[in-house]
Length: 334
Image 1 (cartoon, rainbow, N blue to C red):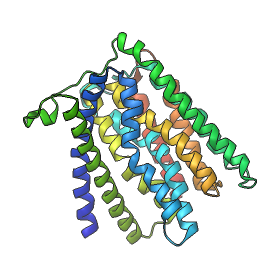
Image 2 (spheres, rainbow, N blue to C red):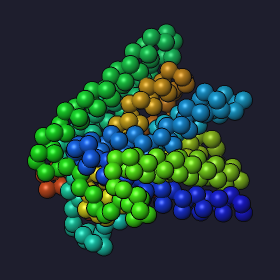
Image 3 (cartoon, rainbow, N blue to C red):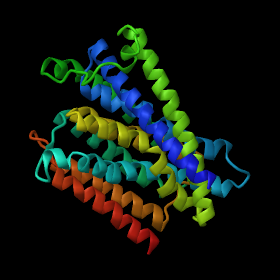
Image 4 (cartoon, rainbow, N blue to C red):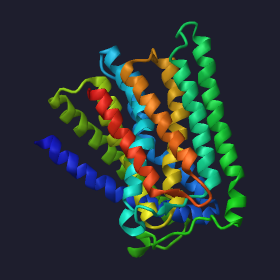
């Protein structure tokens, strides 16, 4: 009973802190004069990806005495996060605006940034998948692929920042959609207040996500779910909640580039740096469940990449991503 109370309480904390964080991030992007692409794909993506980044690292480096379980949780959390983002997160973001825009409406993020995100992710995730068939020893072979993924992410950051000025000049600067929350409490609207709200939002976001994860683990243990299945399905659901909430909040305010970028930027982050660690710190071997998740993730990301255009991407087409997640669940449980 306590686990369920903690579950819903932490869910409320995550929702409130995500609102605080996304509101402050809009003002931060406006203050330093960067594009919505940089704000969503790098700053928001990395910040809200901290909960799901910590789980596999803690599991692999400082988990329980059972090494095999630690590795299963680590690998599952690393690969489960992109699966959740490319399917369920995209689907929830799309259905959140159906009432306002209709089934035949569109989400209209800035095309070049989202396309860049997806190109980098698909390339990186392919390398991570190939690494599963590369022997762990000699280590230099895995280490070389790991280094390549790190180089890819550094290149991605450079490319995104390089495109920022041009996007700002063409009308893709960050424009806050509502007053800064702390300014409503009497604080002056300046950079110090913005950073303070960012930190407050992030602290509560991490605290809420960590406690939410603990309650999910306790609930799943009582239901008798395996460590690998838990890490592929339950943990990503909990840790990806900040991205889902922030993206939904942004697209409902017509900040489509921020909403989409928050998800696709997190995909790049989690498709490069986390697999780079996983392939050298764990056996990183394929199994039916793992390979099914990889294939579904590839299809989901490629589907978005194929459907995005200068006019945006239709909400109807994004419902396919939700269907892909259902197909994954049916295959796994079957």
